Amino acid sequence: MSENKKLVWIIGASSGIGESLVPLYAGAGWRVVVSARNEQKLQALAQDNENTESVPLDVTDGAQVAAALDRFQQRDEVPDLTVFCSGIYYPGGIKMLTEEFSVASMDTNYQGAVRVIAGLFPLLKKKGSGHIAIISSLSAYSGLPNAVCYGPTKAALNNLCESLKPEFDKAGLHLTTINPGFVKTPMTDQNKFPMPFIVTAEHAAQKIFKGLQTRKFEVFFPSFLGFVLKFLRVLPYALYFPIAKRITKQ
Ligand SMILES: NC(=O)c1ccc[n+]([C@@H]2O[C@H](COP(=O)([O-])OP(=O)(O)OC[C@H]3O[C@@H](n4cnc5c(N)ncnc54)[C@H](OP(=O)(O)O)[C@@H]3O)[C@@H](O)[C@H]2O)c1
Image (cartoon, rainbow, N blue to C red; front, top):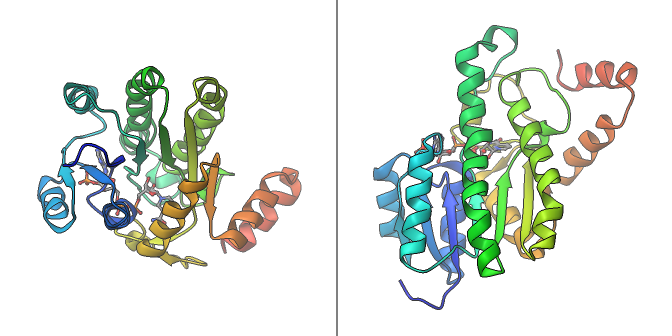
């Protein structure tokens, strides 16, 4: 890997949106480190893309996240950009609300991001520059049916990013929350309900790639669905629930 190129760490790169981000960054001349649990998929990505290295890890294991951060430090480098894409999704309502599914969802989607942010922040602060982007979801804006385990993890992520933003600003660092609508990936292939305005993983990756260049706090898409959901979340509940019920055909 060449030393003077920008370095992006894509976590959750073995599939879906994360996987589609890899050729965009590699093609734009970045060095890319890809992480997830599926070592075979990561190896294939490293073979198929320029300047791409595989660092397998499970974000639910703090020691594995720490080891990946140590690996950067041993090379005297810190990622210029880290995109946290790891996530799991158990679709469904009350029947899916078990401790097992709820804890697993939080451990990957929320605590996984916490492990990465908490480990990276001091390194970025010391370096004086850097950008962390967390893929959350439009479902973070307000509670939606069929997402009783998933939605709360994403709401927590957005709240976390809002809480951290002032400290990132103070340290001269960038933090972005990415809120996609429906994207066709193995995650949404499980859904048995209509997914309005669904886009391909490649389209989503393009939106994220371009959006992160602006270094804005939030990247969201598709715009129409995003604005509708932003409007719904400011409504009083007496109006919110009937509209949400109609939209989600519950
Ligand atoms: N698809 C959508 O409509 C949509 C909409 C809004 C937000 N999102 C969010 O976008 C992100 C990417 O989702 P996707 O749709 O691309 O789904 P996906 O194709 O299922 O990809 C999920 C990624 O997360 C990784 N992952 C899961 N558990 C992990 C763990 N314990 N440690 C490390 N990596 C782990 C998976 O890799 P391994 O299994 O190899 O570990 C995979 O690379 C997720 O945060 C998701 O919530 C998706």
